[in-house]
Length: 108
Image: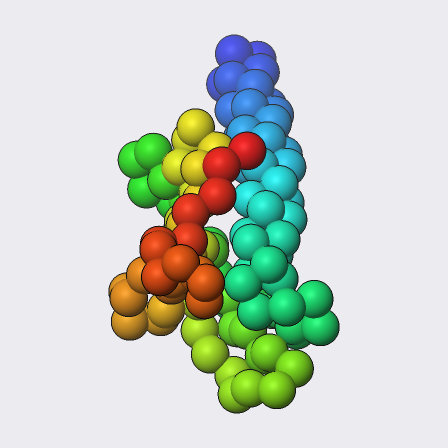
């Protein structure tokens, strides 16, 4: 009976440690995505997190973006494990920089 109790407590503590790490990484990814979006749309852009999805090697943050002089739009920010990020519309179309017509991609 003691082994079952100790095993259960160990599993609960391990799960909590993994959740704490994921939370810190999610906050870092969100900060990076917000900086990318503000550099694309401007500093007075309102950004709200809608959802986070993790897949092998990437984290996808779905954000509701409200530019100062525009309408609400959904932006998906993808951050890979190496720290590179990219922005796309909610439909999956890559956002391009207004000056160079290149895909917006940022790296740490």
